[in-house]
Figure 1 (cartoon, one colour):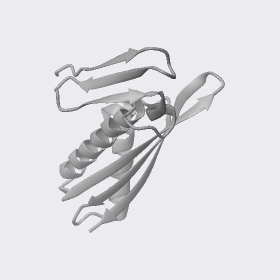
Figure 2 (spheres, helix red, strand yellow; figure 1 turned 135 degrees about the vertical axis):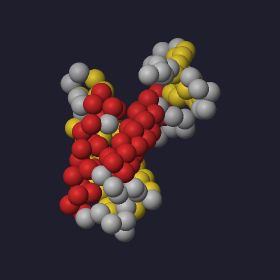
Figure 3 (cartoon, helix red, strand yellow; figure 1 turned 45 degrees about the vertical axis):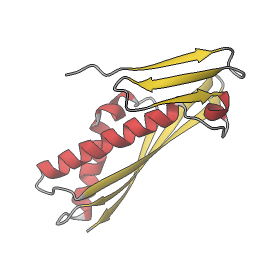
Length: 142
C-alpha cells in the first residue's frame, strides 16, 4: 500500500503567524492562520482537511460494503463536521458528525443503516479518529 504525505509550514507565533499546507499529490494547497482555525477567518485549517478525509473515506467504505452486499449505490454523499472545542488541556477535536445521503436502489432502510454503521466504525479514517465521538445521520433515497 502506498504511503500518503502532505506538508505544512507555520511562520511566527500562534496568533500573528501564518501557515501554508499542501497535499503531497499537488492536487491542493492553501493558507491557514489562527483566524481560519479558531475563528471564522479566511483560509483552511487542519480540521477542515480531516473532515474532507473522513467524508471521503466513509463514502468509499459504505459504497464498497453496499456493492459487496449486492446493492451498488448510485450515489453516496457525505458531509463531515469536525468540532474543535477548548477544554482544560487546550483545544481538542471532540466530535465528528457524519451526515450521509445515498441513492441505493433495492435496499431496505434497515439493511442500509446496518452497512452505514459498519462503514462508520470500520473505515480507516474512523479507526484513527476514535478518540473523538463519531455520530452518524443517514438518509436513504430510492
